[in-house]
Image 1 (tube, rainbow, N blue to C red):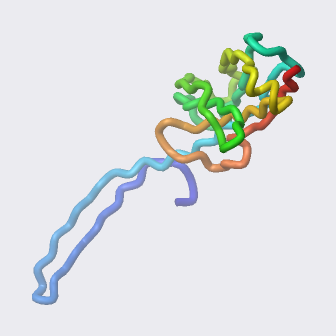
Image 2: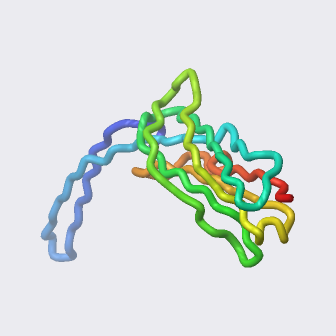
Length: 142
Protein backbone atom coordinates (compact mmCIF):
# COMPACT_ATOMS: atom_id res chain seq x y z
CA UNK A 1 0.00 0.00 0.00
CA UNK A 2 1.26 3.47 -0.83
CA UNK A 3 0.17 5.02 2.46
CA UNK A 4 -1.40 4.27 5.83
CA UNK A 5 -5.16 3.90 5.87
CA UNK A 6 -8.13 1.54 5.94
CA UNK A 7 -8.47 -0.57 2.83
CA UNK A 8 -11.26 -2.87 1.74
CA UNK A 9 -9.97 -6.08 0.20
CA UNK A 10 -12.20 -8.32 -1.85
CA UNK A 11 -11.35 -11.88 -2.81
CA UNK A 12 -13.42 -13.55 -5.53
CA UNK A 13 -13.05 -17.25 -6.23
CA UNK A 14 -14.60 -18.98 -9.24
CA UNK A 15 -14.72 -22.71 -9.97
CA UNK A 16 -14.30 -24.27 -13.41
CA UNK A 17 -18.07 -24.85 -13.66
CA UNK A 18 -18.89 -21.17 -12.99
CA UNK A 19 -19.74 -21.14 -9.29
CA UNK A 20 -18.23 -18.24 -7.36
CA UNK A 21 -17.90 -16.82 -3.90
CA UNK A 22 -16.79 -13.44 -2.60
CA UNK A 23 -15.20 -12.46 0.70
CA UNK A 24 -14.61 -8.83 1.71
CA UNK A 25 -12.55 -7.66 4.68
CA UNK A 26 -11.34 -4.31 6.01
CA UNK A 27 -7.57 -4.15 6.49
CA UNK A 28 -5.88 -1.42 8.52
CA UNK A 29 -2.40 -0.42 7.35
CA UNK A 30 -0.36 1.45 9.95
CA UNK A 31 3.36 2.20 9.77
CA UNK A 32 5.20 1.99 13.08
CA UNK A 33 8.58 3.50 13.83
CA UNK A 34 9.99 3.41 17.35
CA UNK A 35 13.65 4.03 18.13
CA UNK A 36 16.09 3.85 21.00
CA UNK A 37 17.67 7.28 21.20
CA UNK A 38 20.05 6.45 24.05
CA UNK A 39 21.10 3.54 26.26
CA UNK A 40 22.58 4.91 29.51
CA UNK A 41 24.71 2.55 31.60
CA UNK A 42 27.20 3.31 34.39
CA UNK A 43 30.80 3.75 33.20
CA UNK A 44 32.00 1.43 35.95
CA UNK A 45 30.64 -0.63 38.84
CA UNK A 46 31.72 -2.94 41.65
CA UNK A 47 30.52 -6.43 42.60
CA UNK A 48 27.18 -6.38 44.50
CA UNK A 49 26.55 -2.77 43.47
CA UNK A 50 23.07 -2.08 42.06
CA UNK A 51 22.90 0.52 39.30
CA UNK A 52 20.24 1.88 36.94
CA UNK A 53 20.26 1.19 33.21
CA UNK A 54 18.03 3.58 31.27
CA UNK A 55 16.59 3.12 27.78
CA UNK A 56 15.33 6.32 26.10
CA UNK A 57 12.71 5.76 23.40
CA UNK A 58 11.03 7.94 20.78
CA UNK A 59 8.00 7.07 18.70
CA UNK A 60 7.76 8.82 15.35
CA UNK A 61 4.37 7.78 14.00
CA UNK A 62 1.70 6.09 16.19
CA UNK A 63 1.21 6.42 19.97
CA UNK A 64 1.22 2.89 21.32
CA UNK A 65 2.51 0.34 23.80
CA UNK A 66 6.10 -0.72 23.23
CA UNK A 67 7.80 -3.89 24.48
CA UNK A 68 11.17 -2.97 26.06
CA UNK A 69 13.73 -5.68 26.88
CA UNK A 70 17.19 -5.50 28.45
CA UNK A 71 19.77 -8.28 28.09
CA UNK A 72 23.21 -8.90 29.58
CA UNK A 73 25.94 -10.60 27.58
CA UNK A 74 27.26 -13.84 29.07
CA UNK A 75 30.02 -16.24 28.14
CA UNK A 76 27.47 -18.35 26.25
CA UNK A 77 25.14 -15.73 24.77
CA UNK A 78 22.68 -13.42 26.47
CA UNK A 79 20.54 -13.40 29.58
CA UNK A 80 17.30 -11.45 29.91
CA UNK A 81 17.55 -8.94 32.77
CA UNK A 82 14.03 -7.62 32.44
CA UNK A 83 11.29 -6.54 30.11
CA UNK A 84 8.05 -4.69 30.22
CA UNK A 85 5.46 -2.72 28.34
CA UNK A 86 5.61 1.05 28.15
CA UNK A 87 3.22 3.53 26.53
CA UNK A 88 5.19 5.81 24.20
CA UNK A 89 3.34 8.78 22.68
CA UNK A 90 4.01 9.66 19.04
CA UNK A 91 5.88 12.80 18.08
CA UNK A 92 6.47 13.77 21.71
CA UNK A 93 8.89 16.63 22.40
CA UNK A 94 10.80 14.51 24.91
CA UNK A 95 11.82 10.87 25.13
CA UNK A 96 10.05 8.22 27.16
CA UNK A 97 12.40 6.31 29.47
CA UNK A 98 12.40 2.73 30.71
CA UNK A 99 14.57 2.09 33.77
CA UNK A 100 16.03 -1.23 34.87
CA UNK A 101 18.05 -2.08 37.99
CA UNK A 102 21.02 -4.39 37.70
CA UNK A 103 23.24 -5.80 40.44
CA UNK A 104 26.76 -6.54 39.23
CA UNK A 105 28.12 -10.02 40.02
CA UNK A 106 31.47 -11.68 40.58
CA UNK A 107 31.07 -13.31 37.13
CA UNK A 108 30.84 -9.80 35.66
CA UNK A 109 34.02 -8.88 37.53
CA UNK A 110 35.81 -11.99 36.21
CA UNK A 111 34.98 -10.88 32.64
CA UNK A 112 35.91 -7.28 33.50
CA UNK A 113 32.79 -5.83 31.94
CA UNK A 114 29.10 -6.25 31.22
CA UNK A 115 27.70 -5.65 27.77
CA UNK A 116 24.04 -4.61 27.84
CA UNK A 117 21.69 -4.82 24.85
CA UNK A 118 18.34 -3.04 24.86
CA UNK A 119 15.61 -3.81 22.37
CA UNK A 120 12.23 -2.16 21.64
CA UNK A 121 9.33 -3.35 19.49
CA UNK A 122 5.76 -2.18 18.95
CA UNK A 123 3.31 -4.62 20.52
CA UNK A 124 0.77 -4.58 17.70
CA UNK A 125 2.79 -4.79 14.52
CA UNK A 126 6.17 -4.67 12.88
CA UNK A 127 8.46 -1.67 12.94
CA UNK A 128 9.25 0.03 9.63
CA UNK A 129 12.94 0.55 10.44
CA UNK A 130 14.48 -2.15 12.65
CA UNK A 131 18.03 -0.77 12.68
CA UNK A 132 17.25 1.73 15.47
CA UNK A 133 15.36 -0.74 17.69
CA UNK A 134 18.53 -2.06 19.36
CA UNK A 135 21.31 -0.38 21.33
CA UNK A 136 24.44 -1.78 23.01
CA UNK A 137 26.57 -0.29 25.79
CA UNK A 138 29.26 -1.61 28.15
CA UNK A 139 30.06 -1.12 31.85
CA UNK A 140 33.50 -1.89 33.30
CA UNK A 141 33.36 -4.03 36.44
CA UNK A 142 36.14 -3.73 39.00
